[in-house]
Each structure stands twice: as structure tokens, then as C-alpha cells.
Length: 280
Image: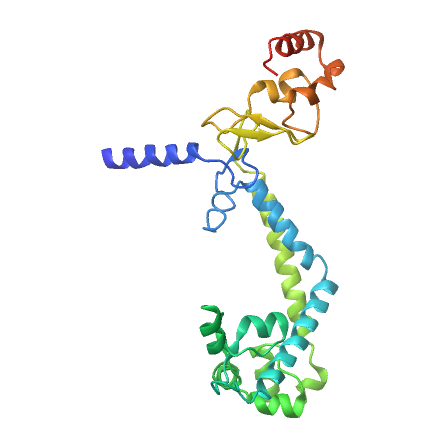
């Protein structure tokens, strides 16, 4: 029982000890990010905005379809490049660097690149790709590239072709897959939007910064001394402390001076005192 209590207290302490790695203003409750180890240190709001940004690529069925058509065309071109590759002039290897092939459409010998640069991405060869398609899709890659100048959209499409050789003439598998991807991303975003309503991320009452010692004015970029070790700005540099409603969260004394007339009377009098004694 005591061990469980210690573990519970430790987890509570860990929860209180860090803020979102992006906005730094909220303690993550991990409602949306608990399953994703790379995003557990982010609050739900930042994670949702990231997913929302990613979903723009899949915001309509037409966009997804055009993207899939382009990817299919590029993939066939890359396989054609691999098929015609005779091998490296120096080491005779037919393995090329996968990154250069997929990103730049270039055939760069992977073993030679490894020796020259001290590192490279995974090796890829036409023989290896042929084995993969033969094993998982049960098709002859060379036959498809030479006779049909295309490839099945997926394994299901390949199975339909094996049952009916005329499937390619009326194939709508790419359209079906694009529709499924669009609906998947659309539904996932709606689910996350609903989950966001139950978010329990705790917002920091003070504006937090990335440095232990300094912050920067969001208007003129002048350095401001932060509250040491707590990573928060001092009240004097928070526009809210002076009764101001601005989009900037951190302002230096000079920039606050420009908005002095907008401060409530008592706050303005206190601000003048701060300026006289040199605290701002």
C-alpha cells in the first residue's frame, strides 16, 4: 500500500513539474496525447492544432484523390528508374539510397554513400522490390511495369485483377481508397474535437518563458529579466498586471509606457511609481 502511495505521489509531482513543450502555458493532462510518446509533453490544445493543421491536406476528397494520383505516378517512375539501373560503376552494387530516390528521384549508390558520408538511409533495389510485390501482392513487378505501365492500387486491387484481367479498365480502387482516407481523417478530427471538451490541462496563472533568466519583449525584442528558476515573467512585465488588454503577453517598461493612458487610474499611479524607482 505504501509503495502505491509513493508511486501516486511521484506521478502527481511529475505532473506538476512540467508544462507544454510548445506553448509552455499549460500542464498536459495527456487526454489526447497519452497514446503518442512523442506528444505526451504537449497540451491537448497544441496537439489538436497540430492535427488540425495536418488535416488540411485531407480537407476534401478531391485533394486526397489528386495527392494519391500524384504519389502513384511518382512511385511508378521511381520503380522504372530502379528497373533500368545497371549498378554502381565503382562497386557494382544495385542498391541505391532510398531517401535520394524518393525525395530527389536520384539513383545514388547506398554503399558508396555510406562510405563517403559516414551514413545513409535504407538501401533499396529493384530485386528487393520485386520480391516484396511477389510475396505480398502475388504479382510480377516486371510484367506490370512493362505490359501495363502501372501498378495495382493495393493488395485488394491486385486480387481483383487476378480474378478478372479486365479489372484495370474499370478500376476505381484509387477513388475508393482516397474516399476512405478522407473520411478517416475527417472522423478522427471530429473525435478529437469532442475529446477536447473534456480536457483537464491546467493553465498557468502567469506567463511562462523558455529561459531560466531572460524573456524578450514581444513588441521591441528587448531582453527582460525573468523570475529565476520558475520560468515565468515578473508581474511588472505582464500587461494584465497593469489592467491592459493586449495581444502581447510580455512587454518591457518602455513599451508599457506607450500604453500608460489606457491603464486604470490606480494602476497607472503604481506604474509611475515603478518607473521612478527604476523597477521598470
